[in-house]
Image 1 (tube, rainbow, N blue to C red):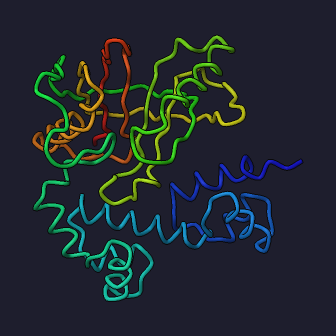
Image 2: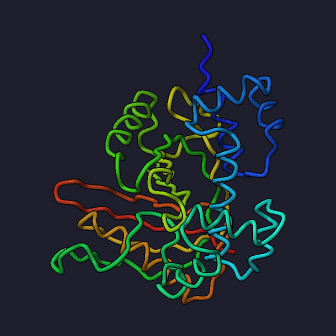
Length: 285
């Protein structure tokens, strides 16, 4: 019996890293003919390879509009369009407004400060009595590489995490690995990615060479320079505002975002009462 989902996981991850990969290259990675690859991919991913490529390119273009000063023409060409006009038409279909308006609105409304993590918009959703305490101001640190055993969650940030944490805890405990650091990696900006397609990797650090099984995958988190803000969270609705504060501190410090991950590193967690000692980390250059 062939586990096609397992076979396609490396293909999906490769496409997420580089949406410009050709269908031929992806089919080759899956060891499938083009004929069968298209159908198998669609059955597993819920969209065709071409649709996913276009969606990921459009999301990359939207991110560039928000976080870079690249021209619309340059972004259009990088997204595979022959002209800025063709790009604008496709972008309007996807986001409901032309690229220039999208860029102006996001910058005017301050959405550049909502990069990743537990997304939040609007006024504070928690009562004044539920404030979180900052343990230290934002700082930059050099982090070593980590090997992470993780389970991918796709959907709105903050939803569906509890059963996955339990599943990973059970997997790690059975192997004597439950004492590792717990890390939540956020891959998408909810300003440009539909909530249903936002990706979170819920993971625990493990020794190099650990082998995943079933839903548990293994990835290497690269060493690098990270901006880090440590907070004591006493109500979990605080995650969104604290992420925005963290990103705002990076912007205020004039740091340039890098290509590495954006994640939460947990020093301790408690449910009753809620007491999460957590560092918010963003890759910077």
